[in-house]
Length: 636
Image: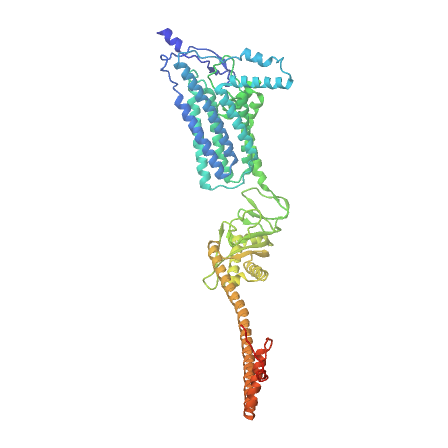
């Protein structure tokens, strides 16, 4: 029974860490202790299989969450955290596959094979020149192809996962260099939620590191490397939470530094995955996670102590016991106190810009006298003196009609589009029309003391004056009147009224200009207003078309009537003249008839014959033919 158990047992070569010198000096010593007895073949199961799968799922979920949070907040640090979690996902996938291989080998009652050496025949075949090849280029290509196939064959499944993870991580890391993210300020609630999730992830990573640190390497050979990686992930998750606070506080410089640090860490992890090698004598079914950058930053919970340990291992010098560090430790507290004192004294120096004037308040009371001119000035440190710098030579602008800043780039002049996040609408004089005004007041501070002390919130006071002036200038107009107003005249009168009321309040400003970018109906009713305007234009167009039709049809009809009337008159006159002529002709014939009836009939008969026989062939037969004895024969 003992021989059977010893034959079916698995022996790993663990890495033990021993303390030496003045600190935690880690030395990797390969030893082969007696492996624990395993159950008979076919019944052995890795006890930490579920742990690795849980960590793998957590890494996948964390990667997706970091990508979504990065897209929602435009935070480059979160994208780098997503790349780190993606690399952890690839490494955990390799560890899970190594566990499966070890489980199958233990269940099949076979000894675990060592790393297979390169096949000598294939290597010799790849290295020996082909004498029958006619071209050197073909021989070189075949040699490269043979070496590539040999490298892929020797790489194995675990090596393929490692190289694939390194390639994907390298592409993602360097793709981030081409990604241009806008510098936006996230919503406070969203930033708080993401920061809380980051801190929760850091806590879970710390718990995982503590758990993995207690696992026997004989059971899980990758436990020490995973423990170091979990510690590093805990720090990176904390950096992700910190980045949300920095982004909300608009500290872009520190954000870039954190992004650059994570970029270097991810690049170093990818390089370590490319260059890691299986140590001599180590089993090939172990996914090597002994990465230099992870060991340097995660060998201890304290990342700075881990860096010191790495330097000690590389240099062979105990940095904690050096004279320089001893001096620094002893002088650290006085140095910090001295730096704090110098920082407090530096508050007594104030630099006033070339476009500014400074006002000094001592214990909350304004100091009388001349204001501080541009340059370096010395005064009592904070909190005794406070200096307020007022930009008296800078032309400033405040918006009227909307809140928030307009988007960069060319202005959208279409009135049916919103120019800012919140546009106000004003009620005009007839009580039925609403109008939106996009305007701005340009002003310059002429009296710094009046601007600072005459009003508690001078910007709001000036904006209220501008709104009051706009209401006064549009309240007695309809929407059509307001839209057809002369803008130059309107803005000139508004600027004068704003200046007059600002002088009455003693704000100490000079109104340089009042510009109106546009006056239009509210955007929410833009489509309805367009329909109304289109209907009015259609009405005007229809009226004009009708007038044109009338102007062309009525004169034509009148001309036709005039022509027909004149034609009828002419025809009537002609018929009347014809009738009169016929009547006079009949009377003449009547008088001729009464004068000589026989001659009249004879002449009429001759006229009828002449009329009917004109142009015809005829024969005249005289009655004297028979008298003279002639005969007339008619033949058919």
